[in-house]
Length: 348
Ligand code: SAH
Ligand code: SF4
Image (tube, rainbow, N blue to C red; front, side, top):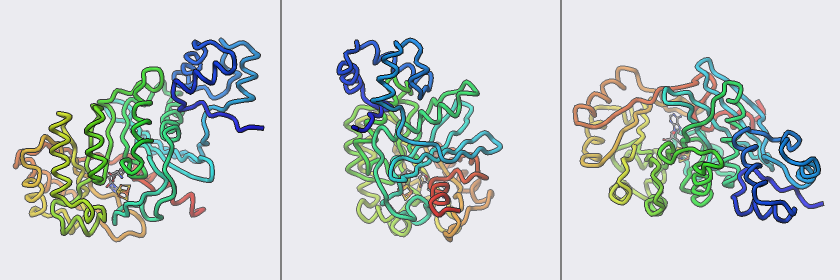
């Protein structure tokens, strides 16, 4: 028996091919997409506008979704974290966040991460695998299913879960286009943020894609000697190269970029660092997202005091920089990247 075809995340041409091989007209493919993406249906038997024989054939030959939700945690603020297991025991997680502007899904692009940032849980166990485009968008589908009882849908995506999206470039770009497709998840490009630790060739390539998404750069230190200590990628693409790529990106896309800056107590959270950050970003069309560190068990880094966060932010504002402090959602369910999966895989 040949393996069943997973129809979730299948691009339109492949889906129409599949239906024509079954001797079915194209509009069936359109109807199927409505069932999957508008109604979140996984069971062919529920597809009541399909003839019974077609429903049976589909059941024999196809499936909807390759992953299974193996854990679901909900925090008091409504944040929901899902762990999804794909084949070969590859577990990824995504986090549903409720903001005033709607529901945001933080999704994963890889299992593990190669980048090895010193403060991050995702890199601790190294790299396991790239997710396929279908596996990336399947996270949106599971999130929509989890939200359906509240009649909500994912409206924004942030590629800030596990993995480095630009290290899985083509699958991530395909997943973005798929998520944006009105017949699929219909998520506006302007509602999509891609976060990177600073892979310069990927940033250059992304600038040419003509996608009006938001690029977010995980900066976390304003000078090379500090950034080198926490982000190994900085030794390959140091700040002068990274900043040049970002300037070019802004010039080509005319889009404002975001810089993420985690405050690690005593390491990069002093006023001198804020001052250097302000000089580094002078003249760039940018927002800065200041993130008080989310402590990771087993790692030595500590969160800054609220007072230090305020002082840091005020200095940046005094230098004319657009700053927001990222509100921490779902802290009691470890909504920071990588933590749930680690616990599941350690079998705790
Ligand atoms: N690999 C990409 C995207 C995933 S990480 C990147 O690094 O940009 C998403 C964001 O979460 C990054 O800015 C990352 O530095 C940050 N992050 C990682 N661990 C964190 C932690 N424990 N507390 C707060 N932010 C963290
Ligand atoms: Fe990877 Fe991003 Fe974590 Fe760095 S911060 S290890 S790039 S997921």
